[in-house]
Length: 270
Image (cartoon, rainbow, N blue to C red):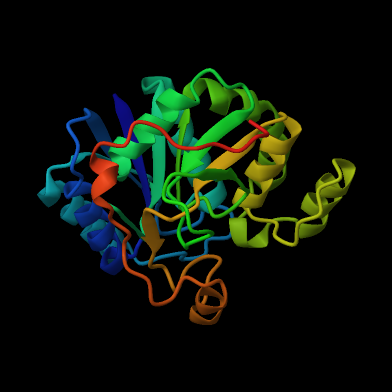
């Protein structure tokens, strides 16, 4: 069993494609799907972070899909705390978890491959999680490589999450009680320097990567991606950044061999 948690907000035009990708998965693996919706108004700044009408549209769309259960926040937690609360709920209910953002289209074999990779690396204390990848990094369909990259879709075990959570809480202490957009960038960068982490972003994703580094772990990503990101506009993206990152003009990568693939070639450092 894999528990799938979708992190969403007020972008139904992206979410509809994410849900289609999950509905079209070609695997017999049993999954539970949960949609986690952040609220519209931030309780700390009183800022209207999103449109309630669009959030409600996402909820209705998910209910019509009959994929699973909706979890909706009354207030806007902001992406950092919202993702953390959703992940905590998921790991308290499932031993294996896949968290996916609302602007990702999966290859129809990805849920199966996620299970294959989790099986392959289940006993590796050095591996945190596995990602389908979102752009081609090399030529090999058979290979995963260790790399810190986008957290648009990540599969991991509850045990691995608990290992990094201790370190991630340093970041959470800084972003609690404030609007995420008004987080203390200087305090976050000071925490980075304390742990020798040279990263330009003060996002929750960069902080999770630091937590993984502090735990002595790595993330694995498919060298040839099995998913694409479609979120040209978002909390941390613009169309210009999206294109500059090499994510423009792609289609989901689907390969017949993934239907029966039993393992991947792996990096030497895992």
